[in-house]
Amino acid sequence: MELRSTTPPPMPRLPLLAWAVLLCGLCFCCCCCEGRFVVEKNSLKVTAPDALKDTYECAIGNFGVPQYGGTMVGVVAYPKANQKACKSFDEFDISYKAKPGSFPTFLLVDRGDCFFTKKAWNAQNAGVAAILVADDKDEPLITMDTPEESGRVDYLENITIASALITKSLGDRLRKAVDKGEMVNVNLDWRESLPHPDERVEYEFWTNSNDECGPKCDSQIDFVKSFKGPAQILEKKGYTQFTPHYITWYCPESFTLSKQCKSQCINHGRYCAPDPEQDFSKGYDGKDVVVQNLRQVCVYKVAKENEKPWLWWDYVTDFAIRCPMKKNKYTKECADGVIKSLGLDHKAVDKCIGDPDADKENPVLKAEQDAQIGKGARGDVTILPTLVINNRQYRGKLDKGAVLKALCAGFKETTEPAVCLTEDIQTNECLENNGGCWHDKAANISACKDTFRGRVCECPIVKGVKFVGDGYTHCEASGSGRCEINNGGCWKETRNGLTYSACTDGGCKCPDGFKGDGVHKCEDVDECKEKTACQCKECKCKNTWGSYECGCGGGGGLLYMKEHDTCISKEATAQVGWNFLWVVFFGLAAAGIVAYEVYKYRIRSYMDSEIRAIMAQYMPLDNQGEIHGHSHHIEL
Image (cartoon, rainbow, N blue to C red; front, side, top):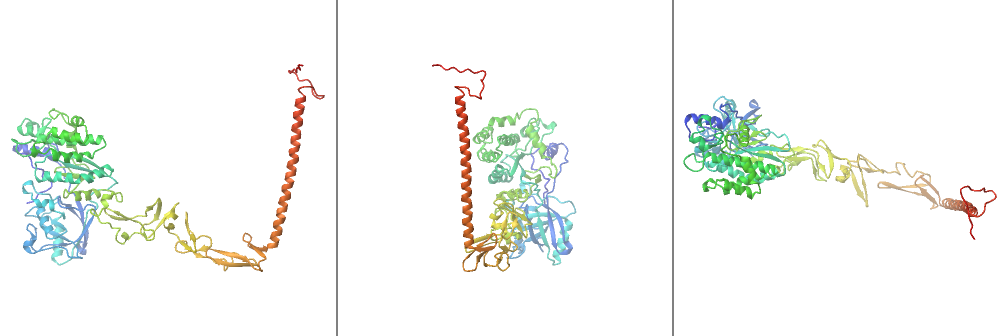
């Protein structure tokens, strides 16, 4: 007995005709059952033996923990007994527990006779790392699902191994190779199972406010409670965009007046949900669930309008604690109390909800029904709960760690938030041999960047300085400031308190007085030996590190002039010096005399002009005519 993913949630007890039509309404929100279910897949690469080398598709199971964003390498084993894995392998004294240094075991089992989840649980207890279920018929791949509520047992939540369904033809070939004693090496690859186009992950959670549907409802609220912390952090920092959704169906027009539709639907049969207890005579009705689902959508919308969409997680967890069906608090009054405690406007929420008794469409629930229809690579949403990440349906256990890994797989490489790079989520591949990337041990700078999928070799930016290169064999600092980081990777040495460096903004170049490549070495140039300095007849040369010292022979009567690389007599130098001083002195004296004469001439001219002006006011001068327009009066 097995279930496929197209199995919808249990329906209320209705007449046969109503059941059939309502089933269509639930799955596809229309009257024709033509929904589209997409089987989510990952890759299975066989690396040995040569006859089987190839890459194959396999379907991800809707349970366990798929390693989204990662890979697993193992060896295929096929049991000689219990080949359908419907019984515990302990009964057959078979164990696949890995020994130190050995490859993990991927157990190949046959389909049939028991639930897929039962096979996985027995395989996990036997010590395998993953289970491969071979189909028993030639058909397209299907999704291995969990059993109905009636067949549900505690072990479902404890399955942690990865699972995959493979085709019958591949199963036959793998089985044949194992039976022949060949070592079959397989690589399970989930790195491309989820799209990862950019630095933000968009995901949806299709859930339900009903808390009376047994283990499935319990697992949903347990997940919301445990995942609330990471979800809110990711949302607040802009790493994710989360949207909650709720499944409803509609009642056919011919049944809207029936007791079943009246108790399960609002807005005259347009939006319905199953009776929580599967009993119309007691407890809450399906329409109560629809209204509370609608209220949770509206809480999200109002919170989002207030730029706090993450409050949805607080509301759902608080509502589950404060307003459970079991305590008869699954009411509007209790819900309003939770809304007010979160600082949200309950009147705005009521306005969003509208009138459940109105004979017209509710725009919020109509949008929810439209969203159930698959778009692009995503299939129709028909199962509760369902997680959709970057428009792909998540397969696997609804568990905090497993879902966080799946979200991390949706980020573009090198853009993952820090939470995705913790030891609990993935292995840091840069810790071993620096991931095979370039590494400057002296400056402790590496080109290895850990990512959720592995690592990339990319030259870093350190303290604003960009390194350029291939990231594998070399990286060099470039631009201004490069010499501040490990001297730009150039030569540098200190001796006797003197430090010389080959680092420049343009690259590595040995400084004056040295020669070499500027990177690994710069050797002192012996200017004396190479005759590049101190070469005059009287000169006496002594080489130093990075420079030279030059003096003059001849008993100390000579002085070395570096600018002219020559030696001159100290007496001649002194004579030249005094002559120069006398020239300067007499020059300054002459300049002062000339300046004084000019000053006296200008003062005398100025005084003469002033005297003439004063005298002109009292008597005309011989050479001054009468000035028209002025009269002078002298009063005694």
